[in-house]
Image (cartoon, rainbow over all chains, first blue to last red):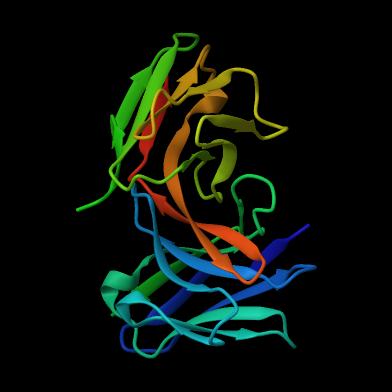
Length: 116
Length: 118
């Protein structure tokens, strides 16, 4: 079975500071990993994904994540936080869809607060 | 723009009164998913369709049903809503990507329907 663990249910950073949201995964096969962002009363928007190509993945809104197999991690970073980054962030791992469709297993989420 | 649409965005129903939530897509994806998300929790998969094939999660209550009359539309029916069913319901579609011998579906989410049960 696959799983992801997000360390820190709440993270607070100052505007302009580095954003680091942590995600560790567990998977018996090469994982497909995703980061989604959710604004209040909205659906989930894909930030970026890792699908066994480049280990450093760049996404939208200036976010990026690095896949580190040795650490089983896929942490999300952004060099400089903006007020508009305040949202809930979910890390997810996909199974390989060897039956019908693949499914996502989500972490518990990290709420990012950005302060002035 | 191609998208996933959910109607209504906000739904209020009474305890025990059946309710239907709607999802439509213009992406022409063959997979559609329904998730339940309670406050401050991760989305929980209820079921999904792969074309017309319905796949129920083992722990999805019988109170939840779904219909997919065609590729574009999918409905979530809650036969007798209880107070515990108040949540955000998210619809997603999936397109298939292949990497080596494995395949996965990248999921595209709608804006959700927030259900209140009185």
